[in-house]
Amino acid sequence: MKKMMKRVLAVLMAASLAVAGTGCGNKEKSTSKKTDTIKIAVSAEPDNLNPMLSAASDTEGIMMNVYEGLLTFDTDGNFLPCLAESYTIEDEGLTYKFKIKKDIQFHDGKKFSAKDVKYTYETLAGLNGEQPLKQVMADVLESVETPDEETVIFRLKHVDAGFLGKCIVSIQEKDYKEDETHPIGTGPYMFKEYIQGQKVILTKNPDYHTVESRIPEIEKVEFRIMTDNNAILMALKSGGLDIATVEPENIEVLGKEFEIVEDMRNAVQLMSMNNTVAPFDNEKVRQAVNYAIDKDEIINTVTKGHGKKLESFLSPSMKAYYKEDIKGYETDLEKAKELLKEAGYPDGFTITMKVPSNYQEHVDAAQVIKSQLEKVGIQVDIQLIEWAQWLEQVYKNADYQASIVAHTGKLDPQDFLNRFTSTYGKNYFKFSNPEYDQLVIDAASTTVEEERAKLYKECQQMLADHAAAVFIQDPYLIYAVNKNFTNMNIYPMTFYDMGSVRLKK
Image (cartoon, rainbow, N blue to C red; front, side, top):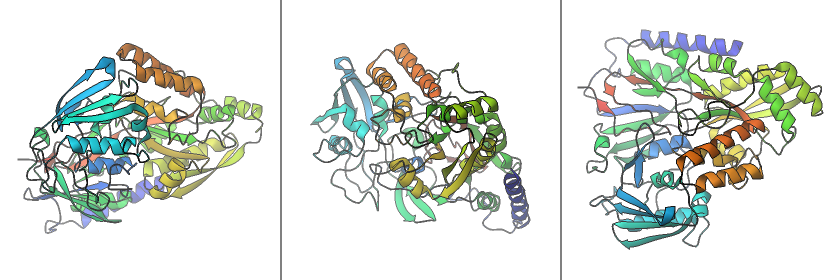
């Protein structure tokens, strides 16, 4: 806690220095409305510029400006036409037929057509004879047909009520082989350059007309890779940044120079526990950890109250599916000690917690949790690792005991809750429960929304009952936006929608 107080004081001092150093003659200060560049901070290095090979939400949020899907979505998560102008669902949910828009071009001038959609989905699902790149696609897609250049027909292996959520995936140009180094899409912005460790630069697509509200106005966007909150704050104050996510305690520091935009981000911050590695292979231990953790303290300390407490793996943002009355875990240290004793750990134990160093709110949460768990005899060795290491060690290989991370928004609850199924390829929690697996299958197979919602609510309660993880909060997304700009939208999944941003007149 002392470290956190020092960090806050350091931020305030840095802000004061930044203000002192930005007089009227500072040419970089972003006060002129003549700017043709918008600079936005992102906290993670792109893991892969090719959407088929990327797993990181920050990367996806950037590259959705370059690529587009058959469908897109609004700020409430409703699906909207994008590369497709319309669709129909036939054969009791087993066939999806899309009519695609005419006169859409890729950034290299080549015409977009149904063959590009077929190429993308067949590659993702492994229908091209290769290994599938996205197992969720392989699990559901039977075939992709293109009877003409403007029609795409998806035939499913089984009913998948969340299939429309899979229709926002980035469509890539058939036969183009350089998506990892020079990505080409149909989106409002074109890729120009990626300087590792520094920034991703996009330029306006002058021919864009797919989605009217996203026809870009700003000529150039620079996504600056910045992980130090002091540096971000100083850059905002000096004009080196126009938009950045900021910590709650910095809202007042920024004064009246910036518009503050905030809302739930449809995310779940959690403490993951590897359910197959001791001591977390014992359910009583996982329950004990849940009883030992005070989520209110984490929210009040780390996000200054700008977060919604959770008891399972779904955010209240998904109103139709969120279970309001989950029976979870109120902080009870004596109950935690009792369960640890029953599990064979009366004197506690020591664990290693791997935390991605570029996400300060997870680092801070880890520090608070470390202090809380010490009260019941659990010692925590926090190991800060780079984001790429986290993806490799934790997310891909489940080589860890515990971690802190947030899973960012998806448009369909299936894309959240299937992460805990035993067949999910990246189930790094290693939670395995046949009854849970069947609930997820049943929910995906019904087209009756009331029944689907009921099943997903059962899933949420089951994850809480078995303490599959410690579900902490949906931390609010807080943007500081230079007042020269407007219309920086918050979506229910990570999307830095620069096409919609406008210069104030």
